[in-house]
Image (tube, rainbow, N blue to C red; front, top):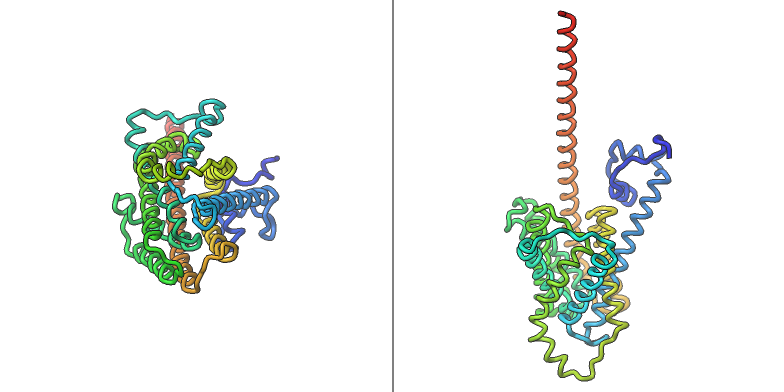
Length: 382
């Protein structure tokens, strides 16, 4: 299109949130994307619709994987309570598919990685990931889907606490008060849980702790070294490592039981479709964050959690008490405030960068003008 009709190059997530919440002030480039009377141009409308599509795909796949895993592992449903085996099936499927896409079909370029880097960076992350998946899948045997989503609200608390411990986050009193408010809300939700199971809660809290540690370690071991992995390359390097780590407890915990269960036969339809959903979810995460922003994913995650709670109550017939909802509501407000604070901090950081760039450009122009001025002065003297 002609230059005058071209939409400004701005983050679509900014317009997405303005369109969704109708709040906040748009910057000058964002206002240029708006038509007369505040209406959006056709190009921006298409981008917003795409953003909604990415959100819907991610919510659907995340929702499907969680409910599907619950169905397989729950003793009252499919009755196959072997979380390590299920996780190993996922890892072997994802690793095989990632290998085909990278080495055979060459759809994605592999990341150059030395053996030392793999052992020092990827292996610890793979170990943490395997523990997180093992414990989170195990929790579905003991806890309801709705209560697990409420416990997952503690993720920002765990990430912030571990970040402070490893000196990746600065300690702030107001942030810590925010973290305590989230923890208080989750504690109320746990107090009101009708089918509270101590072992299930321990498993889920352990999964949150290991997942939070993994996220912090990714920043320390990979991101700080300039290494970024998309979902396919991440599965290519991490999934085999996870499989090996899970193999050790599987031999001692689940293999003897499976060996005695002579009636067991591998259901290719159930486990195959379940593994496909798990792999598709990894791609959806990349699509959502890559095309919008991590903030969009956080908001979408809240919508998904409420949908899962409603589904757990209405379809699976899990008991959701008013105290559950009140406690989770408090935790939700704390998480929303935390995300808002992070967004404001990012905006302030970007504003500082733009100011520094503007000052640098102004300094260069001033030097050029002074140079031109001195040149003309010397010519006039000649």
